[in-house]
Length: 244
Ligand code: FPP
Figure 1 (cartoon, rainbow, N blue to C red):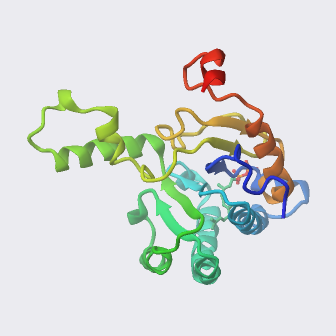
Figure 2 (figure 1 turned 45 degrees about the vertical axis):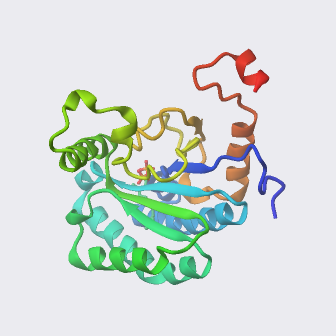
């Protein structure tokens, strides 16, 4: 087991923007889809490692609301891969006490995918280990808009002036989990891309040039090492933090 296992300075909730599948494939003169297939292997490695070292939650950005604009063939292949993962990998997740959740607007997916999502969530819902969330057809702004609608539905007679961060937060995706404290983005870009924009207000950001299919234990260790050396001040001064 890694020496970072159960390190008290380890992040509780890691969010990852998995980028670079296409470039990984291009470098090898392979079709983009092969990059996504290898990307799924990296997902398996990272889930297994985060589970092993005792991370509470791992949230992966698999498909954004903008990804529908990719060539239809690539979208179809990504959907097939998503379905295959739901059908083939969920039993293993269940055996490893992983709880699987999907966030994002699932109504855009075909019926078979929606049914498999529901089945996978039901099968793993009482698991108490790593909470693995796959963001699929997810957008952070839409998440906030949806939360406002849900708040209004739950409080139809309350003046909107009374809406607070705390009351809205209850309707934001994943608000029952510790907030993501470490965001990793692979593939060399340094952007948030509308991922968990509410939840990551205080996240530490870690960008790496590693392409997602090459990502694994060593890369996670490097990110956690960088995280654990940072002073998280949440708006306070360094002196205040050191007094705590
Ligand atoms: C970004 O790489 C990756 C995606 C948009 C898809 C992510 C999918 C996977 C990692 C595999 C399947 C995962 C699950 C959970 C079923 P890119 O295509 O934007 O790469 P590029 O920037 O190099 O073109």
